[in-house]
Image 1 (cartoon, rainbow, N blue to C red):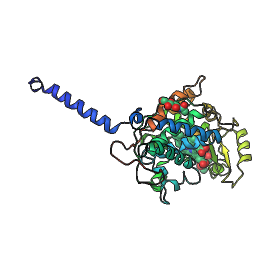
Image 2: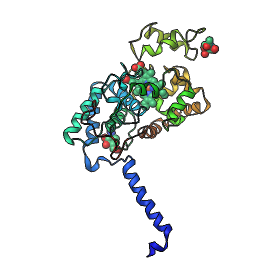
Image 3: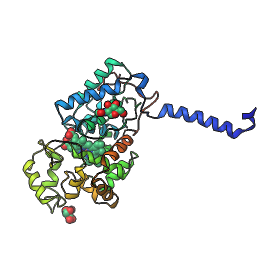
Image 4: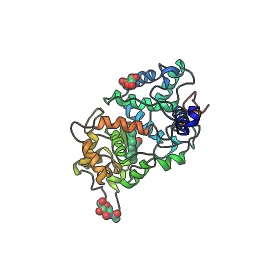
Amino acid sequence: MAWNSTPSKWLLGLFLVLAVVAVSEAQLVDTFYKLKCPGGPAKVTQTVRSWIAKDRTLAPALLRLHFHDCFVRGCDASVLLDGTSGEKFAAGNENSLRGFNVIDDIKAKVEAICPGVVSCADILALAARDAVVAIGGTNYTVPLGRRDGIVTSKAEADANLPSFAANFNTLKSVFASKGLSVTDLVVLSGSHTVGFAHCAVMQSRLYNFNSSVKTDPALDPTFVLTLKNLCKQGDTTTLIKMDLSKSVDTWDPNYYTNVIRGRALFTSDDQLKRNSAGLSVVQSMNQSPSPFNKAFGASMIKMGRIGVLTGTSGQIRKKCNVKN
Ligand code: HEM
Ligand SMILES: *[C@@H]1O[C@H](CO)[C@@H](O)[C@H](O)[C@H]1NC(C)=O
Ligand SMILES: *[C@@H]1O[C@H](CO)[C@@H](O)[C@H](O)[C@H]1NC(C)=O
């Protein structure tokens, strides 16, 4: 009766029902495993911590896995699938991504307590967070409920992963295509405050910049001497720390000081200050105290939502390297 006489209320009710359905099917939520696998996220944290206690360099590796997963087909664990035409063999991934064994170990331990419940995509998101916290970053809550994809493509990874030689506009548009802003670009690039790079990616900046200039003039000349000593011409295999100002990696905003001083490794890092919008974020992250930690959590949560499979899409893989 009453509802019959007020179609606007009826419509509002219908809208609310649809909204609830949409939320339960399409959104990630912090409490996703609270009933389904209450010990799952803690098992991930505990396993990540024990690996990093043995090898600290696994922290940056785990962080990068989540980034490379999310930028190709969304955060669906497609980066973990085996196969010679898969993402693992893309230029930016092959002989470079590390930590697959850690993910397999986490998955086995989580399957042992809740079989078939926790997705590999959620494990990647949790492991990235736990890795950052394990080396001194600030904790943030990871929205959960991703499901795993069944397709992996080298060609798609080659097309979607930004190059170390990319300029600002390219970086901006790649990030924009994933729903990420210039702030997210600059904040997430702050990950390069930890981890390692191969001398291969430094060769052109040090020895073969362009037809008239051998060494990129954007690099601090003193830093060039250090780099040339670590990475000889033609060396493609040596690993060097990305933040050479500290001997042991801890999570800090030092990356932004490096960018400002011409001491960040890649052209993609240097480019962040070559645009006024980028520069203002670099400068704000470089303040003391720095808003980096807080901003990083917020941008990671955004990155972790890219193209996720939820509800009944995709599957929960039994093993992370193969579809069911
Ligand atoms: C903005 C575009 C980006 C470019 C062009 C880029 C490029 C690279 C390159 C070339 C390496 C070295 C790989 C090697 O030599 O093996 C690297 C390492 C790394 N990147 Fe990025 N990256 C970008 C953004 C990001 C983002 C958004 C994150 C995380 C959210 C990230 C996290 C890392 C980490 C942690 C490492 C070290 C990995 C390790 O030690 O195993 N990067 N990146
Ligand atoms: C981060 O916080 C979550 C709760 O949101 C907690 O379960 C997890 O253990 C914390 N991670 C680390 C590495 O301390
Ligand atoms: C080489 O790089 C320098 C420094 O960025 C630049 O001024 C010059 O125009 C470049 N030359 C060519 C041929 O691209």
